[in-house]
Amino acid sequence: MSFSQSLWNANQALFQSTLELPFNQELASGTLSRERFRHYMIQDAHYLVAYGRALAVTAAKSDNAEGVVQFANAANEAVVVERALHGGFMRDFGVTPEQFAATPLTPACHHYTSYLLATAWSATYPVAVAALLPCFWIYAEVGRDIHARSAKDNPYQAWVDTYASEEFHAAVRGVCATVDRLAEEATEATRAAMHAAYKDAARLEWMFWDSAYRLGDWQGSLR
Ligand SMILES: Cc1ncc(CO)c(N)n1
Image (cartoon, rainbow, N blue to C red; front, side):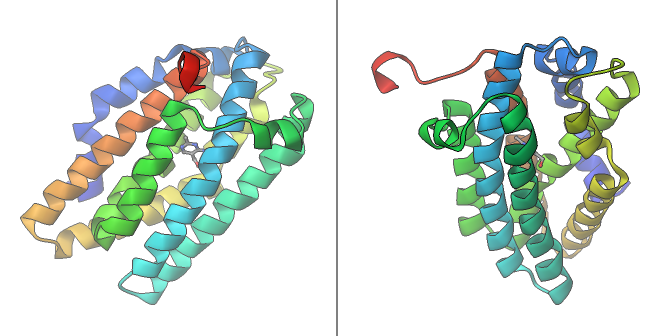
């Protein structure tokens, strides 16, 4: 079994519970409230910029030229997607650039982006790549799962199509191939750290959707 498959298998139950989250169930049926999607979209736009930064730092750590291209391209793509959100969904859902700028990161978004940035800056290249893999892989598999059962005239179809697309899945295969190569060359301790990083990020993916459904925010005077 490949190392990336062992990462997937170790977190299979968590993935199943991610698919079953009310946010994703209602995204598939098209019944998710506009308020919840709007909340998610603003947080995801914040997320994507930090994710782009983490990818760019990881690109700089790559041990070969292919990795620089792979992760610098992914950084570019994250910001392009973020701009598409602003240009399309944000407009459709009535979020102005001023409202976006005035909306701070929620605890879940702050936690996830801080984790990715701290890992990208401080961890070794193989561990940084392992921390980034769930962002690709879980979104691609959630996208495919929802695509397969998405309601007709789903208002969120453009979101579903982005992550179910062959282009996005090709990027996932590329990151899995890099993870597999790095794991092969790594020590047992590094492989264990890669497993831990993957799991941390997979749990934060779950929390991000859960928080969006709850319209998660800072409590009381922390706001
Ligand atoms: C929270 C989160 N994780 C991963 C992706 C995929 O790029 C995304 N858009 N948002």
